[in-house]
Length: 308
Length: 308
Image (cartoon, rainbow over all chains, first blue to last red; front, top):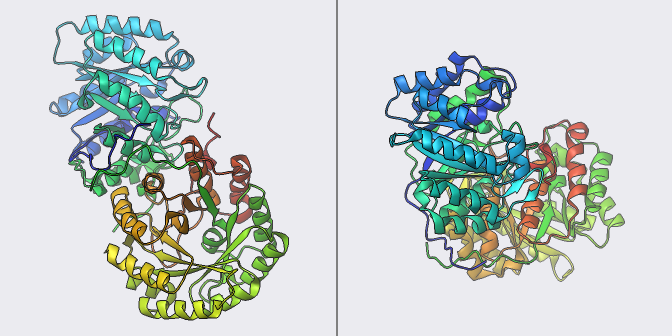
């Protein structure tokens, strides 16, 4: 490790992208009624998010929780034309539906790990990248719609262990060569640690500017904020997070727990980094989760009192 | 913030001090039978700790959970003469009992905040420091017994908010002038963030070497490991932690949650920092907590699977 990262380099602002309605809802075992999803999205919008990952267009057979994706997305865009609505898509079929329903950004997910990509999408990494090519073609000159390519299991894989930087860069290079707009880097099982994050992100930084990269961290082992801090020092300032710390990955054992939005916002604001978000409103959504969704909260701040 | 802290400065080794039997047991509402305490301490010793905070000599009226402190400490030292047994003491009376029961180290606690010190010890900070003077006198030339002075609410106080570095240094300077051996710095309510930790610890570093300082972090808001990382970069390498993430402070609202030993050890080892501890054995103690003590686990690793 070179000593070129200093504590003096924190950014003034950061963006937190709410993903509870996608990564969170997708991992609640029962189907959440569409009107509950919509009402929670409405409440989240009220907290000030500029970008929300609204839903995912995945196989309703594999992930029945997301069967109403088109309805949720259409409602969202009808009511909130100004908020960037992201839709996760794993393949061409999902992308077609996302285009139709008015998503602003397609978050196309490919794992750096072959085994995880197979579990997640039933495709090899190469097959997923070919689908991505087709998705980019479908997008054509609809330049209004952005494509983000998210690299899942970018640090560690539940099946293969440590992931090489090369496997991550391979996906990124392909995405960039296809003209994709943004890159996502996901610690799908929460086992990344600051030195691994540093190693991978330094290489990513050589390839695309930090403002085009979104970090997706899980707090499974309590390391999310240490990893976020590492990313912040490297100039990254866009983070996914899920209200109440919901989420995980249905095809990655032990992956429970996106970093909670309230924990991420609290952390950033305490570091003097402005998020433009209303923590009290976020907490009120998080606090409603056990009653509304019948699941426990996973984060920190929501299960304690607001810090004085 | 100056940019003088680099990611290149992580230490090769760190010490984790188990405090579950003190900070953890003290915060379980019911009285834990003495034989359960002793048996859990035996199991913790088996994980390889060189230092354990065994108990606290506090008023049995105020903290009935610790009424058997002398018995627990005497048993511990009889069986484990080679392991450093720490006893928390808030006053002269506690110190006398700790000396009698064979503690190797007295952890004398003084808050940086007047309000918290009053809640915790019913004394002003100055009165506590006078008691410390008397404790140092009592220790006399028993140089075998160490005195650590731990500064509670060293960053934020639940009653007074942000604590000035000066208030922390005042306690430390007095402790050092009295010939105390070690300093503890406690984030009693878990609201410290990396920049605050950096600011305070840089000043502490001017006064005493890192090897004489123990960091006591709470994970109430998920920031413990980010704070630990900050301390590691500053050269600090001794950390309190409690199996299962038990603990808190009975006199600090919202303080629940020492950083879990398993989370801290996992974090350090993943960073390549050796702890000499057996994570599987620690986890087996943590996993026994809900059944044995009737309380929920607070940490991360213990409520998920061991990372691959």
